[in-house]
Length: 109
Image 1 (spheres, helix red, strand yellow):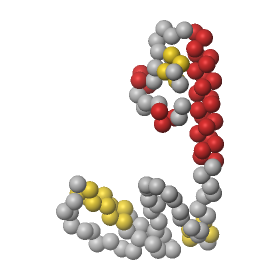
Image 2 (cartoon, rainbow, N blue to C red):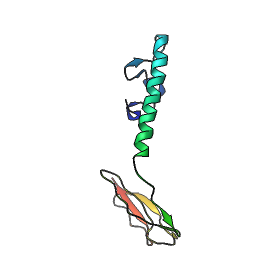
Image 3 (cartoon, helix red, strand yellow):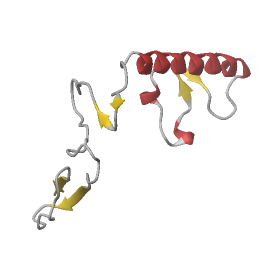
Image 4 (cartoon, rainbow, N blue to C red):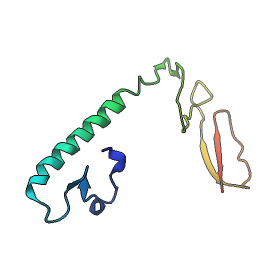
């Protein structure tokens, strides 16, 4: 089971990999549920460790390549002095702000 399978609503988490942890569950299931939760945590740890190294900082500037498969984005200042880099989230049709170098504008509908 993966941590992504759990709910952020505690009351909705009544099973762990098919082990009943609902109110009045069998006592023996609690030990197994804790063991399963520990295994899930270790799986997450292995996944995070396998993501690779961090993007290094050298002399105040990010160095190295930014690569990623799938969806997502990385935001990075366009100016090496990091003097700007505002991020705007605006409704579609809004006027474009007066962006300086490094500004990112997202329009949503």
